[in-house]
Length: 99
Length: 140
Image (cartoon, each protein chain N blue to C red):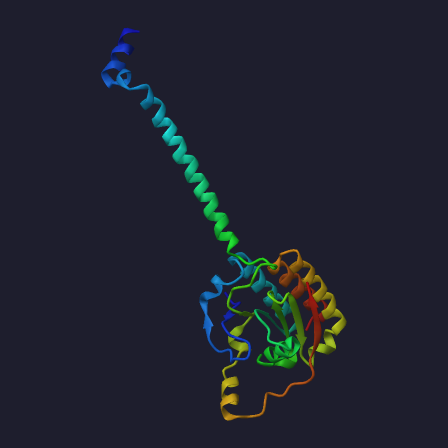
């Protein structure tokens, strides 16, 4: 028992104030908790920027195509510049809906 | 990534492509799902499917048809135009597409999409709508 007591005195363990022995582990725990909260909050904040129908749509219009380079040819511009009549195509069909 | 973003405004020519699609309304995972749905629909039907998300000018149907007309081959194309702020969607089919994809089938897909949008699921509605349209159009 004696050697253990000596070694505790040597490393200064017995000279620590009660506040120090409590505050250090408490501070470490708090830092870990805050870190976890920050990571979780940052993740949800990032997700909330993504659009869900019903919220105001503030993004620039987007147009998706499987092969944009083939399906949006540049000759459209040339036709417009040349002042040609609108590209003729037949009647359109489809449907409309609201939500 | 093959699904591109065309930054444009209704009424203006659409010519410039930006990689800013990642700042758009869809997450990267949702973009990949939409991309996959578009490629599958195109490949299985031989038609051109496209999805527009943004404001539509009045008259809405006319504006959607104008956008549809900007595609390379409108007669063989299908445009799904979604206006979240106006809470409406338009499906425009070309002249030749109409024979394979009657308006009734488009209405069914539109109903399904509107239900998903009403539930707050933009990407899910687009993906299921495209799948339904491609399914009804049949194989090329």
